[in-house]
Length: 322
Image 1 (cartoon, rainbow, N blue to C red):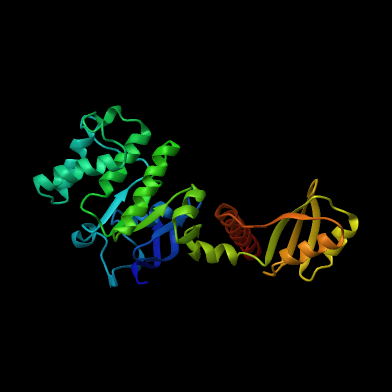
Image 2: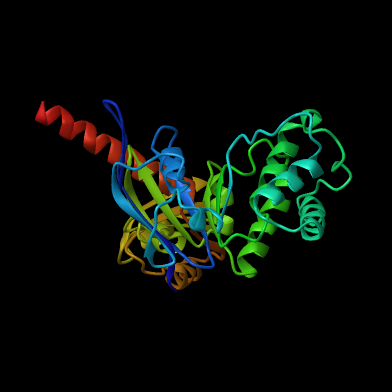
């Protein structure tokens, strides 16, 4: 799968402060790509550079295989954007906002009207299209921001916390829209602090910390390759000391503890699947294994682990150098 967007050695400095020092990212065409980082890590700076709102100090941006000037109209016309806290003239109605942006996108009157109404319906604002935006809730304004970003079917959609302020129902609507957008041929770059949301809809992610890329890849590969320990939670109808010692003696088992009555937590070095062996051990000791579940690391756990290790490592290096 080819990359629709590539960021190479992006650098943006604010006076004496390093906003972004070394961001590299490759966004595959036709995917939802997560862009993750703590507050102050450089996500917003990077997105502003991608949108031509900030001039980069070094590095290059490639769109559909060609290096581009992000301020160029030819590039901007194929991208859509919604900031974390979109702001619109409060005296305009939702429909008037959509038509205003449709006009700026160069849509004809008939298409502008039909597309505006359709997008407002899709994000759940039908019935509020004639209400002044100043009366919209924060969640409604976020929905309007997503609708505006979708005008004229952009090839690349850049979204900064698009579900911020929405209730669970509204957030679910937006996630479904993003999936539909990708199925229709667009690509989404999604920045979000809701890591369960990113894990559920993103194929690939880029994690940055302190202005540079920390890790990039598929969610699946990053989680599976995050460590060499696998955890299983096994449940039995009874647990004896002999059963516990037998499980501890299995090859690859590095730890075995009773986590709850009738349950043990087994740590395995590597990716050896111990479930069949544990079931046999239970039968040999007059017990029955009721379940044995392989624990998957969540994206949130992976993110916090990587950022914590990177921050600690750079703090140690800085202290050593000083």
